[in-house]
Length: 110
Image (cartoon, rainbow, N blue to C red; front, top):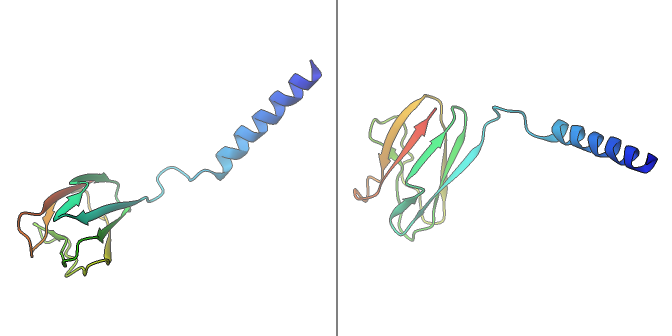
């Protein structure tokens, strides 16, 4: 009986210490969008203000990540390179590759 009580206390202590080491709510998150096969994956992404989005070009061709609104523009991203952007302003942003007009995607910043 005493052992069970100590076990519950120990488990309770572990539970509370786990909360201490978890990331605080509202911390920025990093999201990855892969460019492969002339597509952005995922094609739609929802992030929070302050989050970082990293586009990784796995195609053998250069690409851009250019918002239709001109809110962001990566310039040319070489093969096997990446570009990142910190989402600052809430809204929906359609974007694409200026080199390959059929490549389109959308990011929503909340």
